[in-house]
Length: 359
Image (tube, rainbow, N blue to C red; front, side, top):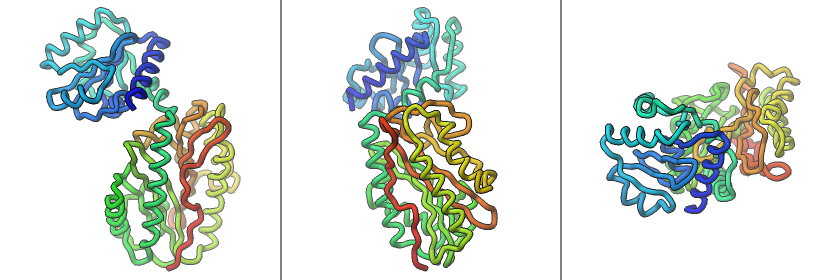
C-alpha cells in the first residue's frame, strides 16, 4: 500500500494545482489515514502543491511514523505557539491554503490567525472527489468486507427465530462478529415487526413474533474498509401486504442495478428507484436518499440522492437501498453494495433478497 498512498498524495497535489491551492492542512484521522495508511490520535499532514509532504505528530507516534511512512517527512509537533509561528512563516510563501470543512473551531481559529495573509478555502469537496473513486486495492478490500458480511448474516439467520428480542439479536451479532475477528462498520439496525417502519431504529426489548418481519441493516470492516447490506426477512408465511410492498422495493432495487453505469448522474439513478415507488403510490413513504458511497467510512460521497449531480465513474462504490415505510403496517428496505464498472456495475452483496424462514 506504500506506493498507493503516495499516488493518492500525487493526485491531491494535481487537484491542488488545478484549484490554485498552494498547501493543504489535513487534521482529520480519516483523511490522514487515507493519504498515509497510518492511524494516530494526533497528527497533521501538510501537503504543498510541490515537494515532499510533511507529517507532524507527537512523541507517541514518531517511531511508528518513521517506520511506516515512506516518501513523507516526519516532524515532531512543537509547543502550540512555536508551531503556529512555523505556519505563519510558511504562509509567507503561499496565497491560498486548504483546510477540511469539518475542522474544529478550536483548530481553525488559530490556523486562521497564524495565516491571516492567505486565503483559506475548504477542500472537503476536493478530497471527497478523490476518495470517491476507489482503487483496485480498495475495491478488493470492500469486496472481502461484503463477503464477510454475507457470511455473518447467514450465520445469524441460523439462530434468529421468533421469541428472541432485538437486544438479544444485537448481543448475538456482536458475539458472532467478534468470533470471526470482525468489527462493525456501524451500529447494526435490527427491527422486529412494525419497528421496521423506523428507518434507523435502535434495538430495544421488542420480541420478534411468529408470522412477522425482521429488517436487518448491518456491515463489517475488513482491512479498514466498510460493507453495508439490508435484508427484510419474514418468519412464517408472508402476508399479502408484506408481499406487495416487498415486491415493489425489490423491483426498484433491481432497476437501479440495471441502470448504473459510468456517465450517469447520481440524481438520475435515485430517480430510477423513486419513479417506480411513486408509480405504485408510495412515493411519500420513501423519503430518504437511495444510497451513499462506502469506503473507509460508512457514509462517503457521492450519494444517490435527488440533489447529487456527480457523474458516475468506474471505481465508485455505492449502496442501492430503496425502502417503503408504512407506520403501523410494514417497513421494507433492500440494500446491496455496488461497484461501478466500465460498462455497468458489479453487485458485491450476495445474500439472497427473498428470505422466508420458519416460525
